[in-house]
Image (cartoon, rainbow, N blue to C red; front, side, top):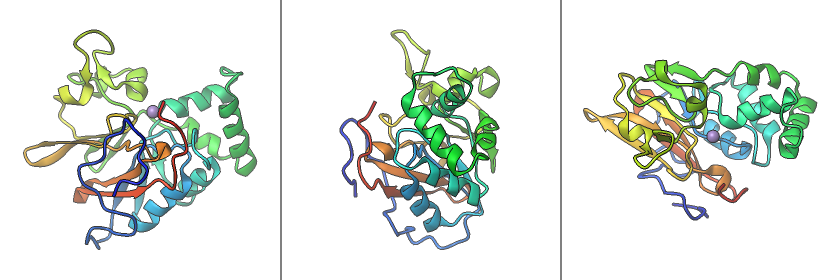
Amino acid sequence: MWHGMADGLKSPERCVSDGDRGGYSGAVSTLVVGDVHGCAAELRALVDQVDPQRLVLVGDLYTKGPDPVGVWEVLRDRDAQAVLGNHDARLIDVIEGRRPRDSHGHAVVSALDAADPRWRDHLRALPLFLEVEGWLVVHAGVHPTQGPAGTTKGMAIAMRRFPLRGPDTQPWHAQYTGTVPIVFGHDARGGFVRIERDGAPWVVGLDTGCVYGGMLSGFVPRDDLLVQVPARRMWRAVD
Ligand SMILES: [Mn+2]
């Protein structure tokens, strides 16, 4: 079931393999997809398999992987929404001249500009949070006790542990006491996360390291359905 997974990444607790929807055949309202990182073939496979009415991504859309233009085409053609990831913020910095030596970032920007300049407006408009069917979508995490109101931009796009440093730091979601269920990404080493409250999913982490040779994961909040496709190959060593 686990195809060429890089060392250091945890496998998910359960998964639906490529081409199989686990017996699920209903119309899917919203699909939330984990960190794509330029893995367009895997994104296309996942979206085609589920065929949702609404597509939402947890960010880190274009860099590291093989096909940023293909990712943009899926987003554009599906009128997809996404939240801002740390690597999306870096691309904004590249566009605005704040990362002159980021050769990969410049190559990604050039490829996307050549394909369809409208990608820039989509990138610049990415919010830190989206509300999806009663769930909060964020790239990395929220302040574990103060929720979105206490969450800085840096926390939303890059936090894995809380406090941010120190001897007592723990995964933020292990301490989350908020009032809204959360879907997040950004933590390929942490892998698939599913924390339940009162028997229902409460915190779901979808970064299963597709660009590192893991899986691309999608979650349908309304139906508590996890759908995954394996990476076509290992595109990058784990950072
Ligand atoms: Mn990230």
